[in-house]
Image (cartoon, rainbow, N blue to C red; front, side, top):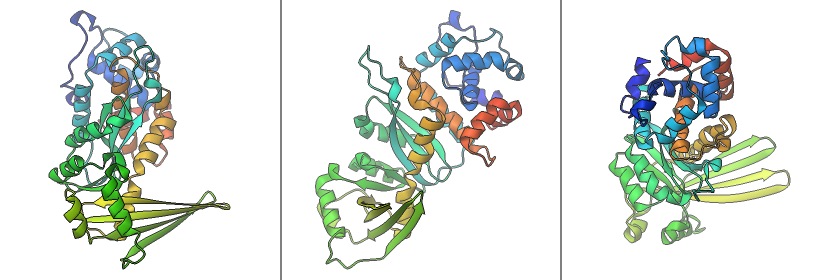
Length: 364
């Protein structure tokens, strides 16, 4: 409990003094344990507290008895998400190693968090994902996907980027974002599309020119579930001419990944283009580009399918954002636990075994 309180000591209790029947840190720890056991809502938190009374009283005083689901709901609606996010960063500083390798940045909408009565759109959460450590490093909320451009700089400012390669999809391919990554000591691999129209056209014409002397390429072939996918990575460091025209911050190379998929009698081909701020060989370029999909497969998919985030119906005030941050904390704890079983099985095991749940919370 001391370690948990140390992480969240900077969080101000938003409740009036006469409404603080239950200790804020005890409420937060019960909520976290609920998510670690597969719970999904404030009702689950209240039920968990009752059913796990004996276990919780090992380390919680619970002087006010069991909190109701309304109590949990009010607390998460009223908590300042900026302060809660700062506590998450403190938690990660105690919990994780220094960030390294590829850091993928991407956004995800919480589909059920819209509020028709107040004309509020679904919450959109932009997250930073460490592909090697498989941990959420930080998050920043927006009220629409189109606002990722303003959220990404805020998110990057929370992170130590020295020695990392930051990957972002085409929406984040902006000069200011590229410059910020360089200024913070990192490198970037930015997907390039028509939001940078003239730069994208020049890069495509150059890389696709059949008369160009082809440099080294790297090809991989994967076959799974009846599908054959061939990925070919091409890279060019001859970009002085491009910099003379566009002067893109920190640009060191441009590249493309061509993906050909064969499924039965159908064949499809797509090509993605990238800006890179550090020289690398085509094999490493292919690894970096593919690592970006880890945020989709290992974070967004797990949140939706394993933790049912898309079905969460919290809509009011700061509730959706604060509970999304709490899910990220729970997911990081589950991921860092070293038992060789899936995260879905870990959630079930924590619900069934007090000993395993105790092991998880002792990581804090």
